[in-house]
Image (cartoon, rainbow, N blue to C red; front, side):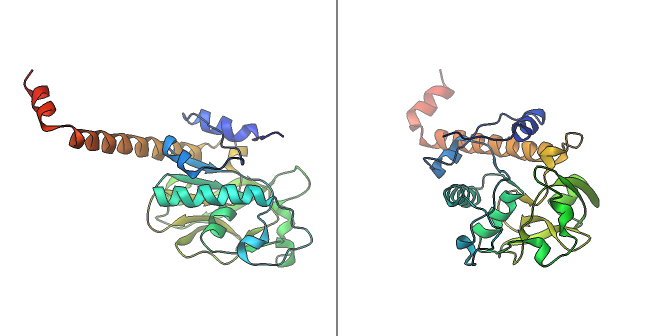
Amino acid sequence: MAAIVPGAYVEGIAAAGGTPLLLPPVGTDPSVLELVDGLIVIGGVDVDPRFYGADRHELTSSQPSRDLHDIALTRAALEMGVPLFAICRGAQILNVALGGTLIQHLPDVNPNAGQYQPGPGRYGKVQFSTVPGSRCASLLGESAESPCYHHQALDEVAEGLIVTARAADGTIEAVETTTGAWTLGVQFHPEENRKDARLFEGFIDVARRFAAERDHHDDHRGAERQPQHDREDALHP
């Protein structure tokens, strides 16, 4: 058995100033998120339709064990307030974890959707517009383009998420949470655009601030638990 992550993801994190740690889809323990400053759920195979109550399309290929892993960590990150950056399959996992559904094969509903996955291992390119005031817009501006590689997409958007970017044909390209911690899901592949690191840099910046606030909170709680006489001794050596 091997747990493999495409190098572009870890290189993107490192280039933005972060330290990548891999969480393989075995021995899943959501409490591990107490040790990290942010979570990225990366791309990969299709989400199994059993997790959103649909029948399987003939072109759907899934790994349910990985779905269980990613859904568990996604839900834990949302509950714990850990910054969450969900990429391609990750954005679909985010939507499904919160009760949303997916289009299992975009060309069935959009005859031009072949542009999103031109061929095996061959990335397409998508242009999209962002919603003013969104996290996506604050990092990328009114519009942007990115490599993409998918034949599925978000359908019914889960409660608690809002759409913050769309392609010209209406395909959902980004979603965000409306409350809680920083969360951004994108249908495209920013890690494949080495010349544009804005999303990774934005995520790492948020993760740093989250870590600093958590450390400050822990220090404050530690001071509250310190016996009164110890605090007095510290003030009067």
